[in-house]
Image (cartoon, rainbow, N blue to C red):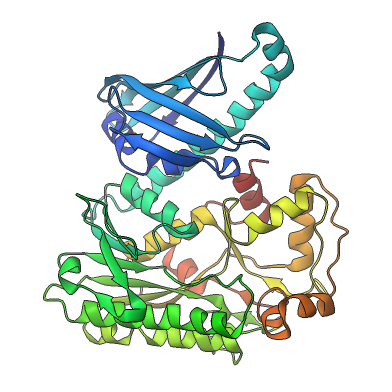
Length: 457
């Protein structure tokens, strides 16, 4: 049997460290996005007899892992044992120990055997150890970062939080982050709620949302909306706007009529509200633009008015280009860059305002917990970059050339002039003034840091 071991110290009591791992959402937070893991089945938490079935993309062909939890001892350990999967044997012991009253250690100890015995070890032994090193560097960084963010507001009570778009690219990780912090999550979606859950069904197009289902909710985070990446046909243009404006209006009117209203509504928005502005520095006090996406943004934010009039604190989450390997722009770009097909778009001088997925989640949490924040808040990293700089850095991180330039005229032909000018050719140099003034701390403020972290490079 081969071994891998990584011990990390956390600045929280052992009970808090163990509780973080035992809560819903821990697996989603600890799973490296570059492997695109998918939970096919999960029953019983982490206690003895609990089972997990995963699909993991550790290479070109996805593999299925069937794991069983054993040897659970509260605040001391639990173990994952592979019952079926790509390894001949696999046992992962999660060990917990106190250092003192305010800190503790996590000992991740894996014993494994590769298939084909000595031949498998000779061929893949080094690769396996390097892969485990990358995976656990990511896992421990996420865990420590999440614990620090929750510790900042440990004096605040845990909340019952309703989320729309909770199964999306951002929403999935946000819900997991909040769950591991001890908050209760209520998912608002079109799907029929699972038996025994507190989730809520709605249909914005039909104006269907039962107010009784939201009574007693402390906060609402609204992230639902049609993807901006699909081609802008007339039908999709309508869906882009209506999915944001109509759903927000329905939600705001519903919250306003509750007998016990939530304290805060964090409503999705985007830096697209500023339009394409060249080299101009844009902060929350800048005027809205005049193009289609700016018009969508104005309608999106204005639709929250009933909630604000009812005394609910409203924050408009003006999100930039979220960098995450499992979705969004980076999820599309990285595979092309790995093939050597990456390059600048148009002149390459247009400004991009990125933010790491983990900082997006952290900033939403910050806005949730800070009662003094309201109105528009730019969710971007402190420094914008040009498209040419983004291209250079992503190519360097992936060790690939970036010669496949896409001229502006070709992008306009491919996407349509309006979509190309408003998205890939748009220039938005946005400053997160509100977050900076409020003292928010970015974990990954630099473009290269965020790309390396998300891509495991």
